[in-house]
Length: 49
Image 1 (cartoon, rainbow, N blue to C red):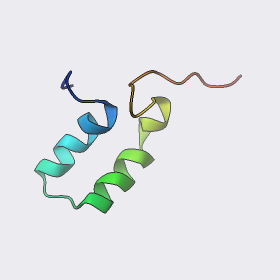
Image 2 (tube, rainbow, N blue to C red; image 1 turned 90 degrees about the vertical axis):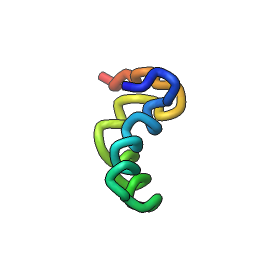
Image 3 (spheres, rainbow, N blue to C red; image 1 turned 180 degrees about the vertical axis):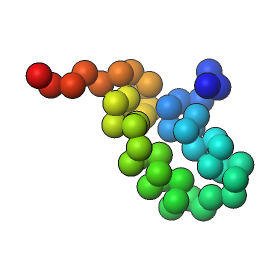
Image 4 (cartoon, rainbow, N blue to C red; image 1 turned 120 degrees about the horizontal axis):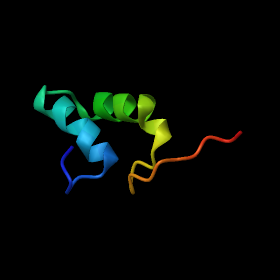
């Protein structure tokens, strides 16, 4: 994790380094386990019981 980056930035970092285009990065970052976190703040989102 890179503290200066938000969740989106941390997940996207390696994808950018591998040469992924912007659409692929956005699709992968928003589609994976990031639904557990607020992408902007990094706060964990509680699941509804």
